[in-house]
Amino acid sequence: MLVRIVKMSFELSKIEEFLANFEANKQKIRNFDGCQFLELYRDQNNTNIFFTYSYWDSETELNNYRYSELFKTIWANTKPLFNAKPEAWSVDKIASLK
Figure (tube, rainbow, N blue to C red):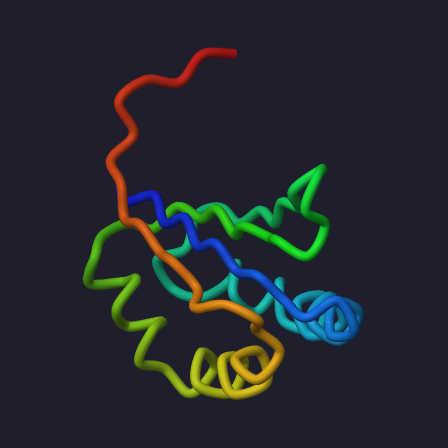
């Protein structure tokens, strides 16, 4: 399993537009083949900074999503809203405690 973390920073005036776009597409992302989990986080101090956190079966499935029409459409609507370059990490889970 691959864990994908993406950090995104938005213009303050564009946050609601981003949230509406995420709301409209979150189930499509989560139901994309290979996606096992999806969450959206918001920084408590810098409220224009958001993180997506998702689990993918493999890098292949993640890349299938990244090159899909769904991603291209979502990204085309999201990219103009940024005020900084997004950052992304693909990581392996080492430990999980509940």
